[in-house]
Length: 127
Image 1: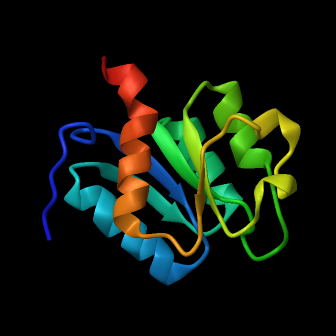
Image 2: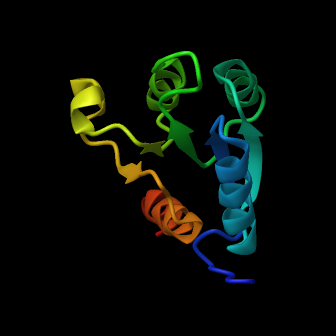
Image 3: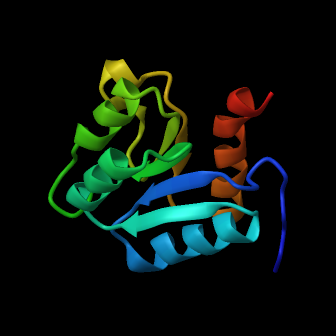
């Protein structure tokens, strides 16, 4: 299904998600909407390398990459002023106050919902 969306055309979106099937679904939905996916990455190290090499326009970030929750990548995204959303099964109480304003997409995720969220993250940059 091709659902091209001008808000994602030429956007580079980093995906950090350790669940292979969800990561693939997110990648497919974002690419169908016109984005280029950076990753997907199953671990923070790969995402951090990509951030250092060529920062994306925005990111979708899982909180728990199989070894507990980590906020290193979200902190680096914030430091670089790259908009992002959490893709997580955790509720807001699991997220530190410093990320209170960060959008959160609840698992299970409908991939098209993630593409819509990415469009919202990019909207301020594209107006």
